[in-house]
Length: 350
Ligand SMILES: Nc1ncnc2c1ncn2[C@@H]1O[C@H](COP(=O)(O)OP(=O)(O)OP(=O)(O)O)[C@@H](O)[C@H]1O
Image (cartoon, rainbow, N blue to C red; front, side, top):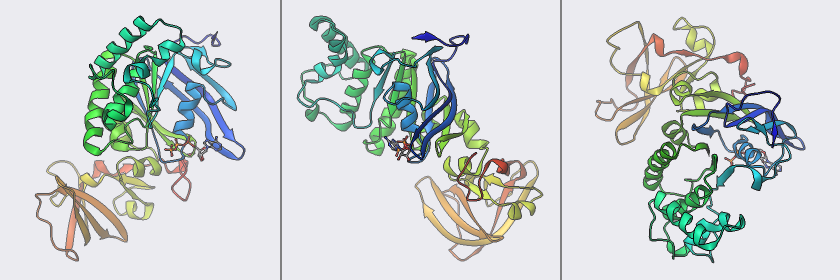
């Protein structure tokens, strides 16, 4: 590895103006990104937005067509994947079916030429780390999906990489197991202090696990921030819509409430009762439909030519579809969007 041009090694991972184009497809386009050491960093975005390509650029499975990737301040240009201090956990786990769990976990150490006894000891430790002690003799086919996912994690951790790259590792798990693994992954990451860069298209997963989130759209980063920042203060229509299904309101609607330009309004900010404090607005409309979601109900209300969605507690009395309703919201919850950065179709973030 070579030293970067005089920059201190303050970031675990850094992308400087990195692009990866495949012919006319700009999979990753002039992306700047800095991940702090020990951070749990999520790359969130819809299918095809460039997340996986970004991860592959860090891992070294792809080369940038422009720009540079750095690991702890050192350029990764011309550094092959196996010499990068990173490991990747893939969605499909990529375990070897003919090998025992222990040998799967020990595989990376075998490739490095570490002796059998030592690599089995380290693999056993890694299996303990992911709460699978005693599973070493099994084959992957004899494990549940969640257990296989843990083995894949143990295999990535056994090398003690400085950075762990995770590409939708929980994608194949059912909801309950997914939520359990989300908690465990986060605890493990904090305990080990390893930098995690996690790819997901699930905004709930990104918001609940990450220290910071980069929202990808069309090969570019639309916004980077803490989960609370990207959720509560989205910069663009795309981010507002993608992270938490906000009401994205056009200027004509916002003008009625004293705002110019586009704005977002979170569904949970719309209530039947006026807020107790601060300036607020009321909007009259017609209830179109309601969906029961367990703890909450999602209402669709037609008001001022706009379809508004509101999330109210399931226990709240809701009138029948077709009824006239009045919804209230705090003036402060009408969040202005940086509409200069958005294309007319509401998709771009450039
Ligand atoms: N090897 C390749 N050749 C041509 N195009 C590619 C190649 N790899 C990726 N792409 C394109 O680059 C874009 C970004 O793909 P990428 O896999 O990075 O997206 P993603 O956000 O990870 O999507 P997903 O969530 O579906 O995995 C897509 O349009 C994809 O078709």
